[in-house]
Length: 513
Image 1 (cartoon, rainbow, N blue to C red):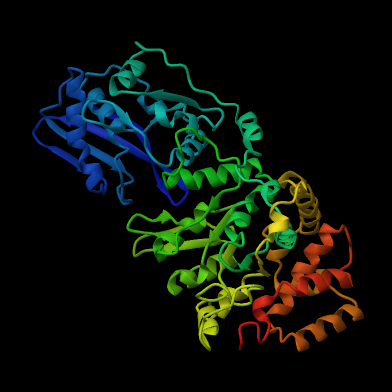
Image 2 (image 1 turned 180 degrees about the vertical axis):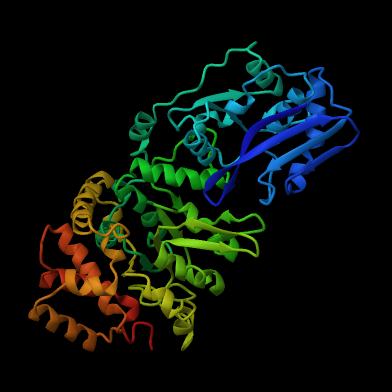
């Protein structure tokens, strides 16, 4: 007898349908076809043990399990539940006509309990698109799937619960979630706030400009100056995620298996801070089964690289293309997967190996040329993609002990949102551009036009400070953002002057060169 149901496979951050067919007929042996990997093939042992726990029998006839389409490789252990239910139906131990109306996924343990699976959100979205009646899956994954409306999400703990549900012996109410209410109630829940930071007003200003224009930032300063503390708070002043962005971000974390048990929907900007020993694949993504890397997990949020020169040069260089294209394509012999990677890069570094070059009080002990060699670990093309170079100085004792109330992240964020609204209107006819940092060179000339006085100032700055040619466009983009924060239609002299000071690493002689 033939029985059929549906599962799903995840490709990148999108899902596609897999038809699970089981035929029990005269003969012997168990066959699994449809290009399964080792984990899928091993489901025979898990399924047999699970169904015996509930006094059902494993068919001792010829059993053929087909996973279609047969030319796509099937990976993982999440096909256990649909295979088990189809096998019981094909051997006439399960009496139901509902299997084809539901999408079913879940990994079985040997005692028949269900373990959670990865990639639930994109699978649920695909199930709704294909107009399935519902989605049967492990109860632990149900809150994540319930984000998708107009789909009956049936969470089950064991194989027996799934059997009883399909036979009508157990009434399981579909889990429903008010997605918008969940999203809007949690989108302002950040652990760190700028109100906790005493002093460093110039650095806060630079980060506000970065958040307003989507600019990448590098902070250079001695140990203990507060670089990491400031970076942790950047995501709290970025504009709130839209519901579309939240779903897109949650899909990536779902595929990577990074969603916690308590978080069904990511409603705040992600903040990722990988260690400098990270490999190229872990940073950008890849592997035998392509998985999203840190740059994709930081999509719509912040990627913080602490101690930038300590990262492997190859790991930093593979970021250059994703920084420009806002996506990363992982190519293999038989598959090509695209992951989104639209993130803000914020990096920090010491000015030299000992950390005290240009320190106002402590003396640098690095030898001649050591500082320049240290800075040369960061390539010019990567530095070219960083708009703001900010020098961080230590906070004085008086500033640390002052009773002044620092500005909160909420207050700063309000200004950032207003500046972003101006940019949204400006780029309304450009669907792929929504912030000043994303402007191509031809658009910079039109949108960042400056008067003769501004040109004279910029020329003088480039000549006297020894700024490189690559700094020209960056200065104009940053000055446009500063003008947006000030609510000005034109880029004024003061906006340009402030932008010029954020090019520390481009200045000749900054590191003794």
